[in-house]
Length: 238
Image 1 (cartoon, helix red, strand yellow):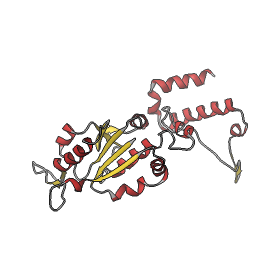
Image 2 (cartoon, helix red, strand yellow):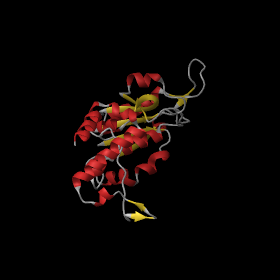
Image 3 (spheres, one colour):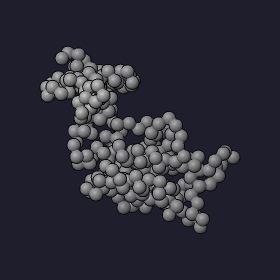
Image 4 (cartoon, helix red, strand yellow):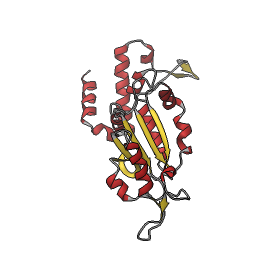
């Protein structure tokens, strides 16, 4: 898989992409991540990539030309499954979207900045607009880093124990069950006995029960999904 990130502040995310699971996945050859400085694609002698908006609105707007030049250069070298723009008014990023994007061969993530980008870019170049939450950031670099991390960590081989990623919260539309480690008792705080029993069936039942209860309490909106409702009914039948 290859991820190309276009930004006006490459230094903001370069370090992040070299560390932890994302960094190890690159060393293993599971993913290639390239960060492109948008200023390298402007013809302006001052390397400006923004200008005042028409209509007298406040703020500055990223220009069409450098974005088009950068995306066109990349597309001339390979096909891209998705060209994503990070924006507060985009589709909400979630685990199913991360799963879907992890199946792509090549994607571009364009980081928004300033007041936004010339809307013609969104009309003619972008295939998917994505938001990581209902709030506004200074730029889309953090959103791009969040998306890249969520996508890369579920690539086969990125995590030593692949079952760990499959049991994460939201993978089955449920929040994950609580987890514990040694010691079994600390300051009188005890690990649930069922987890020490060695009985796999009982442990699985406890895990599902905890997931359902935590989801109902913390994120009841997730339980509206048909698949989740089916899982809940299956648990009740046991």
